[in-house]
Amino acid sequence: MDAAFTAEQDEIRRTLREILGKRCGPDEVKAAVRTAAGHDRELWQQLARQLGLPGIAIAEEYGGVGCAPADLALACEETGRALLPSPLLATAALCVPLITALGTEAQRSALLPPLATGGLTAALAVSGPALATALALTGEDTSGQWSGGGRAGGVQARAVTADGTGSGSGGGWRLYGEAVQVLDGHSAGLLLVAAHTGGFARSRTLLFLVREDAPGLVRSRQAVLDETRPQARIELRNVTAELLGDEGADVLGALAATGRTAAAVLAAEAVGAAGQALARTVEYVRGREQFGRAIGSFQAVKHRLADLYVQVQAARSAAYYAAWDPDQGGLALAQALEALRVTAGEAIQLHGGIGFTWEHDAHLYFKRAAADELLFGPVHRLRAHAADRAGLFADPADPADPAGRSDPAGRSDPEAAPAPAPPQSSPDPASPPTSPPTPEKVAV
Image (cartoon, rainbow, N blue to C red; front, side):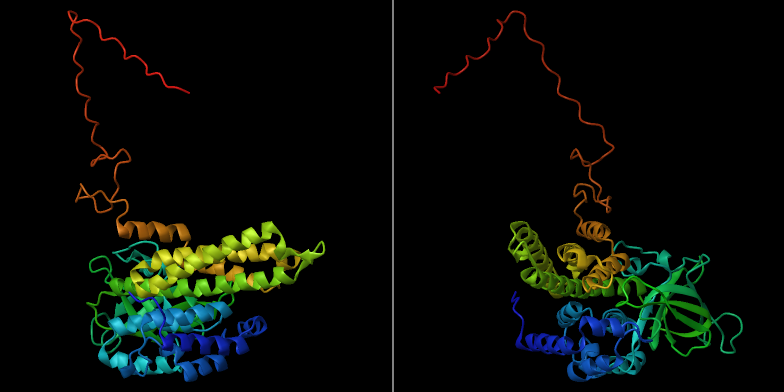
């Protein structure tokens, strides 16, 4: 394969880096996250007009740029460098693929054009802290129990008649329940709500469209660790909703496919943040002097920075490969999140006493690393799930063992008893005893 970037991709990255360098410094980021929307609306519209960033992965027939998800990942590497607070992840990486995969032609024609121009933003709402589970990043839940499973809690959907009474078809759907940790849910004009329906008899998970002005919808912004990723609590009190697609749609499969693409995008974003945190740290140690010389000239500091550089570059390679092959997104995301966490922690350490102050810019990267791992990880679960999907622990001799738990001793059946040792023949008393071999003399 040709891993080199095209001229168009290089131009997108250069233009995006230039715009963000002027409009998205640390002070601008801190000011933007404290607005009601949680991001700079003017900058969001500028990115939509000049680069078509919200619609970069939307087909041209719906008003998008028509690029591949890999281009979105490369763009998100630049937004990660600046820690850009924007609805790009929630809209372009989570909701757009679901609408494209599950929506009817009428729904795609009505929703994708305003999403591509940035005039409409969207957010994915799942019940409880189950975003990583719903996207199949940390495990497969083929029954969709994370959406409620017919029990109390979560979000429940009920079909109503045309007159709004009783249950049946022809009158739409009503949603009741709540969802937390909804990325950009407080400001999104459209919500994609995952809800359980059918009770125990026909238990299934469906996706519904809810407008921001729907009666009975209550949204409140939550206090979070990383303010650059604003989250909301969504309460649905008998809210009228529109079914996305039809009742027979493979919602769980679409969510898993979206999760693989989103993992590649998140990995690129984390690599961009880790690279910028490392660059800022290198710049600081070059100028900070101690004992009459720059602290960056000390061997111990050089070794720590060299280790960080290797880890960031390895994560960048994994992220680029995942952008080409989204099936590797889980592993790439695990490596990128780990690189970001380690790099941000070392950045605080190498900045010394000033780095430990909460107001220092290094803490923006540290909080992004911690918050992303809480939302989409943790790292060890991402790697464990990737290993299970790859069948690393599967037993090829036992086709009835799809989970793939092989015996540590190498037997095909872990519960089988070890084979008995072959019987040893007794020595013949008439035969002379065998003398031990004469040791060989070796000259020293």
